[in-house]
Length: 472
Image (cartoon, rainbow, N blue to C red; front, side):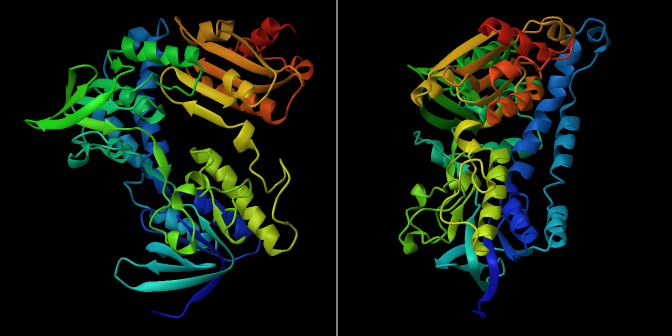
């Protein structure tokens, strides 16, 4: 084994989060090395955010055209699955990370390809694909940005089968005739609708309801849309066993029922990918790794950080990149001696929004866009909260589509009279979300928000209607 190389910061994982940590520390004058065993750019670029949205977008556009008289008459054809898959592939660069590798080099960041093991305080060994090994020692920090991995339920027979996870679903080269989706979360529901619109017969099996972390009125709109498109959605349904019969997946569900499909997508959640990194030898429990607001792992000696999915805070790419910016700046500040063990809320070093203002979108058609806390979450946190909700029925929504159906809600802290949560559900409501995020993060008082006049005729007029109903 060669002699150890020295750098200021070692980042394990070159996905979007790891790249952002590395970019920030280098901008602040430190040196950094990224270690990656797969594609530089990570899950979001190649198997999650980008390809899944590329699969969804053509169906959403077609549906939007059909929702407007005059335009619907011009729609004479159907979706071309192969063109959709080809466009999807273009967003992954054909699963080639050459351009991402070029960015890493241009940013002044070193890149090591291989599998990393944390072997000691600030020490990392790397096993390369050719069998050789390298060793690095960090002057300041080691950062875990290793993302997450699918959580597979212990269903009888499942482990022995060639089921899909989201990776296979987003990179498939053909559309199956039928698809069973196990799980009613965001990824499962999005991919169910995408494949149904590409021509597959789709069945969703959910142990409880679908999209259970969102208000019932919002998830209900999505459920109605899915069923209206011919997708079978089995809620409150257990999957007891899975087997293959004549090349088909057969799922034993509920009280004696079965679901048969050509392909099975298992989308039952994800968990931090923190095993196999050598953490046990350092006295750390991989399943309990969690970064604080600066990404620092408590009780690890002040040098180990965990961010993004690996940090156990919020499993969303944009939030992970936000954490990465804070962590990179915190590492640089601690290296300069200008930041202690903790950071103040809302400072440049603390990912405070993780706790109170996480924006998230379900890219189904209709969409759900939410930021902050639901009424139930707010009250659980001790907030004296109220909610105001109504259908989205304004001039802008009527112009958007002839049968526009949507719903909106604000959650108000009655003591401070600021918003602590906002949810929109309806076609393309994701474009309303950032205004809500600003209102929640900025703690804009309702008496000032009343003066933020929405342009007419836009869907944003729903803000005015919500505030009027609240009592402004």
